[in-house]
Length: 131
Image (cartoon, rainbow, N blue to C red):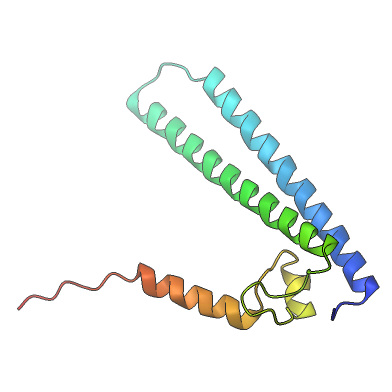
């Protein structure tokens, strides 16, 4: 493995901290949804639309927190299996700099860029051309 024990230890602490923060945010978002539901008063259409928009934003933030928790848990499991810092696509090393920036990264920079480019290509919708 290309990480020394001090780096692994520091990254494990960061992962645990990230997980704790994401869980705290998730709990806060869930509580907010409950409070929003309890205090939903009958109002005009604008109030109702604002309430729905706020609920939608809260749900999106909750989904992001859940994804972060999953990524952190995956990274911690990889660390326990001595597979942390290894790209899941090419089996090459993930740079220490990348792991410092994104401790739950599971792709090296080259593979991450390739995945992003592929995602962008799939999302591209050709412009309709008139004949």
